[in-house]
Length: 637
Image (cartoon, rainbow, N blue to C red; front, top):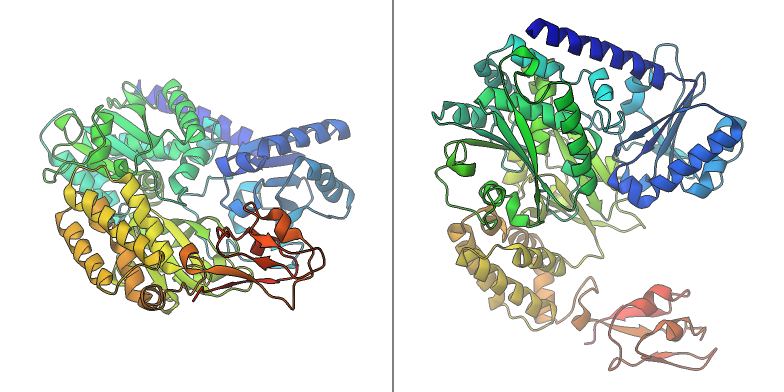
């Protein structure tokens, strides 16, 4: 029976690889990025436009709907590869631009609005899959190289943008489920755990705990049943790493969870995903059904005698449910609040049974590690932080998107080489790593290596992978207040240090940004922070003060300016700024007056205007619409 099942899977994989080769090497092969970012930018309309244009031209083509390739600032993205021609990846593709792109690719016409973000000349040996992640990106508008991927190393994201996430055959064609086959038929559970442990893989949910060690603890607990849980409750502002993996390569996560179940002795698993990820959930559901149909989920998988089932649990969007004990409470139908540890989930988790909780990325690494070996993975990154780091690079940077880089790369390389630096000629000011519970680092720390230990030593954390860049126009006090407001909104309220401490801290920050703070407020913030760090039940409360403390540490002069000088150096805090017309530059064009919703601007046409500070609500619209830079922001003092 076992041999028959393996033989059937081998035949299916061979057929899948044949179909993959036929598809990717067709006369015309087109991929369209259909992740959430692409769809939101108009990828569905672009796809319909491509289908209409192909029909009008009488061209037969293979079209593959793939996940996000990470270059979110260029979505929607369309790639065209015709036999014997260069492969070109076009960005910001709208329905109107489809005809222009086809004229450019097939007829040699000029591009007016479309942007080329990748271009590779064909060779006799390369196939589409072999060169996808070695593109030399450039913008035809700028005429210069864009090294968005030059320093990336895609492992977890290697299939995203390459395969159709709704096709198990595509996943089989790129060696999908071969690691599961190896684990079930060639390795004992202990050998699987040892391989993961030897790889040095540390949990990518933020804590950085050795994954193999967590699995060993769960296996050693003499209690059944046991559970495997995937934490896909990605709630950090500006973070979308897990979503993109689930949308672009769901089978890798499922395969990793089945392997983990075999390793710890579990027969059931939960994928806890936030309900705000409908596309990810739909593709997970499709992938689970496909795996079940092939006998890769359910009873006696591959004839090995191992049984495993998976269920998706949709979360209601509470940030605290990213904490593993709160997540397990939610799975059990309880309120999403954390419980004290120990006991840890490996001993007593969901339903009071041994449970292994890992992040999406941690499970997605597992099949790669088993296929290529622990030594391969350990050769990447740094000694104590092997492998790669996946970040959602957002904020004030030229190129936002999803990146995967080797551990040990510096913040400078990520922000300036991959992200292209700060736009509009402004200066870099700070970067927030680790999301709302992370730390804020100024330019003096740009050469800090990005790994678990180096970031922690610098006063920040790796977190689950959010990275927000701030430029000189950012008020760091307001920046800290933003994250504290997020914590106040998302605190579950169970323990007083987090519930009360975060509220009091937010009130202090609001006073400071309103120009009503005192220097003693800084001491009070630090006192509250100590109480939260020592007394909070979970990491949300314990780490909540981190952004505020790091901003005080590195940008104390901005707090002093708000408190003592009653001014905001970045001209952001509304109570500490006012708008004034510069007489020598005002032409009396009336644009600012027409756009002022509260009629605070007066003046005749072609005459110098004035802004009444008593009426002005400081919305900044006049400043934004003035075509002559005739409005300036000043301190009211």
